[in-house]
Length: 277
Image (cartoon, rainbow, N blue to C red; front, side, top):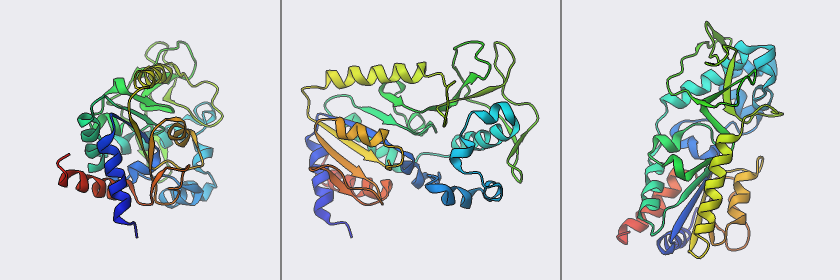
């Protein structure tokens, strides 16, 4: 059982902070009903069709399918696109946004998630880095251009029994060739990173501007398998609050909370609300 004083520690750090950096992995979306695909068996439980073929998440999140079997590629990514489109962010997003808005200085968000949930919850695009790209943006598989374009109302018809896309697939508006999500995939040499690069430059500018401020990093649902998000918290001066039900330990001084994101955020927020923050 999580001791109450841990929540009080976290609340005190947030209350004293000048600015908040929020870093997030796939575990943040679990309370919204999104899968975190932890390990192949978790993924196969959600998609038994892929289990029968022995295909893991890493196998499918590979750009080679857009060339060898585009219907399978868009079956996988089209399903995720529509899942993220119809999913609403849980209340923890609103809590995080309120904390950032109430801080003395503007904060920032860094996420490996490609689902667009932070934007849907009202966070500013100008203070966000999506380090693996975003499913609501597309690029050309033929690389006819380095353009990246928004696709806010994409429709892909999917045969859910076979997880194959049917009918017209998304195409490049410049040359008519097949389009793909602007997401960094496994073994991906063709990902166009310019959008994420611009976001990263804004993060560095924010980090520099906050150099003399009291900073707190709130990390949520970021595992050790892909460590980029966790390394951000380790490299940031100030207090790290790590919220993770399985892997909450961190460097000395870390406030470790072994809970899901929503439960932990509500517990901390309850203390802040009592204190009028």
